[in-house]
Length: 151
Image 1 (cartoon, rainbow, N blue to C red):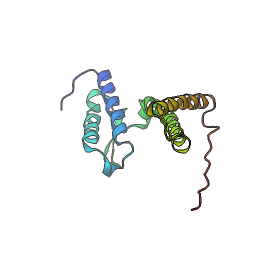
Image 2: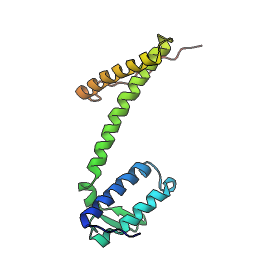
Image 3: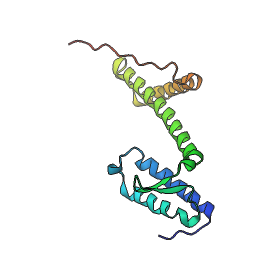
Image 4: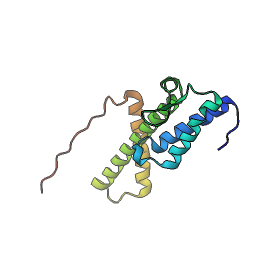
């Protein structure tokens, strides 16, 4: 593979590939990785020296692959990845809790509720949860086990 461009352009490409591979393979073990993404990352990482970016990526004998350096991870794209993870966490938490509560209402109280009303209820609950989490974070979130009904 041939890649041309400036050092800055290559660094941006390297960061995008790193972030993309984290999205695809970050939660997988080495054996479970989607290989075409992992291999592409390794190919691009191997080219870092051609663009004088050895301070960003180094070959690890221990893991037998190219990896971002510790210095780079402290100042690199990880801040964007962390911001993305945080955003997804709150969005998913709000949406899933609201959906759960709306479905519980439909199952426990009003089995004849229309999909439209259920959707509206979920949106209202999402707003409620968003306001709560913006104001208090997780401070007021508690897990309560419901007593199992005996048959």
